[in-house]
Structures are given as structure tokens and as C-alpha cells.
Amino acid sequence: MKLKKVSALVCAVVLCIVSLVGCGIDTREVFSVNGEKVTGEEYAFFLGTMKEMIAQESSLDLTDENSWHTVEIDNKKAIDVAKEKAFDDAVSLMVQVQKAKEEGIVLDENDKTTLRKQKQSIISMYGGESVFEEQLKKWQVSPDTFDKIMQNYMYASKLQAKYIAEDEKINAISEEDILAKYDSLKEEMIRESIFVKHILVMTKDAENDEQAKERAQAVLARLTAGEDFDTVMREVSDDSESSYEGYSFTHNDGQMDADFDNASYALSVGEMSGLVKTRFGYHIIKRLESNPEIEPLEDVRDGVISAIKSERYQTMLMGELVSGAAVVKQEQIYNSIK
Image: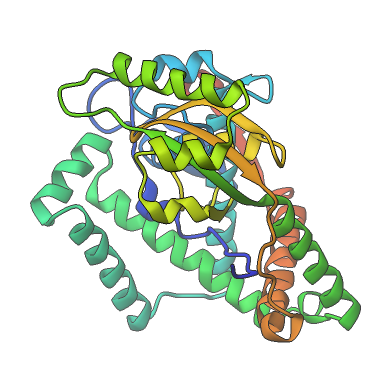
């Protein structure tokens, strides 16, 4: 398992699923950043992206609008959490684009070629030009706005690269800084690494979900009564034999079904879950001691240094650019967006 931190700066482009109330493109000003307005259409991109990310992490149903207004995250409604984070992301991107243009950064032909390739990759992912155009209509995002947002991410990426290459504070990195960051990343990986075994009861042909659940409950009863987990697993699990050796993964790394992932991470070492429902069926999970493979510092030094620089850039961004920006929110319009 690799020791690395990956910036999510441009991930939003491929994750966005936008939902707006009403019809047509929303051209209302939701807020402005240093006098430059952000429309409902543009904000919808960031909100859709954030809802997708939260749905993956929290097992919320992205399409169930009611759940966004009933489920709470950190004592706030999920929709309010998504809106606040989307707002922060939009402001952050806007100030970076503005700063990039102040610094004289432009998108050259190589950048435009990269953007065309990125867009073509996304179009291919959706099954072709016509399908992608239909998807844009469902998102209620115009092709021009989609292209503009992709360009803005490119501006932000070039600004970050410029500061990381030139800023003395970002580049003044001591050996102590490297060791401290390496230890921090190592501790995080150990804390979030998971090793589990599980018993899967799948819904069989001509069997309804309730019957599969009853079979799974019978298996759980045997385990609760004291039968050996491995013995029962080999007898009844519908997973492949390779799973008998267990699965190792890192929480929220996307390798596993989100419901399975979250249930596994909630367990203490040695603890067994109740029934966990996923699209594959019903699972009974047992968490085991994890010993993640940690690469030595000499093998990941460059990655650790990059993580330090990226972190310092983000600190500078939030401390100087974002905090100094004049942000004016149109509260009535903002509150009307769900």
C-alpha cells in the first residue's frame, strides 16, 4: 500500500452530477467574489460535485432528495453541509483564477490541447458526444459553462505550480519538516488501514431480498452463539475463495463498496458486525489486525516533499487569498437552492 497524498484539485470535473430546482439554466447571481459574479448554473456544478463526494463517504443516496434534508452530518443537515463546502470550493477556485490572471498566467496551446483531451476523455466515459450533450442538459449546465469551469481549474493548477516553483516560504523545507510529515502520513495510514474477512449471503435466483436476509440472520445467529468465524465462512459464504485470506484497504480510498467500507471502519480490531447490506447482498464482517506496508522514507521522499509544498500552498491560499477576498452572498437566492 503506497504512502502518498493526492491533491483533489481537478477531480471535480469528472465527478459532477448537478440537480437544480426548476427548469432551464439558472443565470441568477448567487454570490460574487471581488466583484465577479457566480451564477446559479456555476454554483450548481460545485454543489453537485460536493453532493457526489459526500454521498460516497456517507452512503447517502444521491438521488433521494429527502435524505439530504433529514440525514445529519456533524449536527447539520447533509444538504447544508454540501452547500457550505460547495460555496467554499467555488470561492477558492474563483480567487485562484483571479490571482492567476493578475500574475499574468495565460492558457497556452499546450494547455488548450490538454483541456481538449480531458474533455474528450470525459465524453468517451459517458459513451459519446450525443450522450454527453444530453447529460449536460440533465445537469442544466451549458457546454460553455462546463468548458469555462475546466479552464478555471487549469488556471488554478498553473497558479499552484508557479507558487510551488517560486515561493521561498513554500520551498524552505528542512529535514525535520520532511521527517515530521512522513511520520504524520505514516500514522494516518496506520490509523485508516483496514484488514477484514467477511461472510457474504447473496440473493439467489428466484429468491427475494427478505429470504436472503433471513439466511444471513441465521448465519449471524450461529456466529453469535460462538461458532468459529472462519469455519462458518468457508461453509456458507457466497464470496470467492480468495476472500478467505481477507481484504486490506484504506478507509475511503474507493476500493470497496462505501457501505462495506464504512461498516468495516466502524469496527474495532477483533469485533464482528451485524448484517451489512450492500448491492452484493448481506455481509457479516470481522475486522482483524492490520499491518499496512509502509514504504521507507528514502523511497517516498519526493512525494513527502510534494505533500508539504501542496499543504503550504493551501495554507497560503486560505490565509491570504481567500480571507482577503470580498465575497458578497445573495442570501435569498442561495437559500432557495436545494
